[in-house]
Length: 367
Image (cartoon, rainbow, N blue to C red; front, side):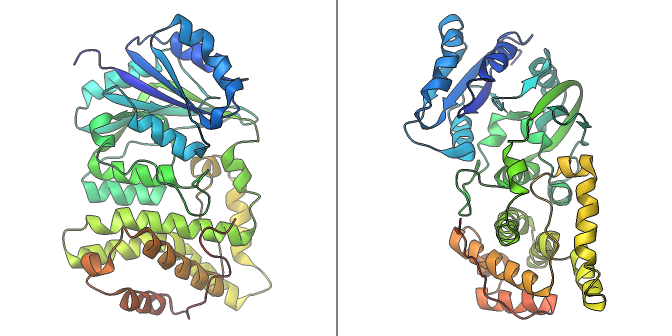
């Protein structure tokens, strides 16, 4: 396949002001074998009208107007499932890419036939002015999965994805917490992809990420603490569903389960809890959290998914919500995966963290 067709999924809602610049950027890409699929959410006719000149003049552009509101995750997932190309790129409606972006990533796909995703550095524009470059994700499937679990970065989601690998994933799932937004769904998708093949960072092309202060991830910073803990529980459950079953043996799957859970409920935050008990007035965990937030590049690389520091009771509530989400999703079976019942698993987990179960103050799906 010398010039594979690349579908670019462009989900949009109320994006009429930035759409013309993006579509012109795509129209003038050096790589010509593209299929630009614009999915206009919720009958947004104003955004649809902004696309009309490109639809009339270039047969590579097509558009679908969604009859009802899907939200960002649902609309993006729809474009994934309706692609025509051998490759897929998610293209946000208010972002831009360098002139040879698609060509450079397609060339990389030819060089690394066993890799499933190819991505570039990302440069912020607007109110942010820094650049993010994350490394390739290599090694065997478990090594890749654990490495991605540690990083949980979102930058590769803007890259070129092999359609054959995409078809082996669940796509973008919708969260009970907020189906229109579904925080963490792209990281769950990337975790699935990491088990299928390598992610390759490509030198040269650039993805230009618009930061205007009204971004979805920016709004999460204003969520009340209770909602952020609930979002973290949903995110943890999604990662457990992907990571834990990949072990070949019962012992390995149990280790992976604890590793995934500790990513959100343990690790450094367990140590913070001990420090808090010794010096409750110092509120050390929150001080460390404030320091992390001041590191702009670190915050940008993992925006919206950094763990919330919490005390003993909040950890107990988080764990209860993780189990509630796992049971609700019905994709994770502790009997088949870990050789234990829900009751046995919960008892072991609370014993592992040496805390008493606490009922959640907010249920999954609480706005």
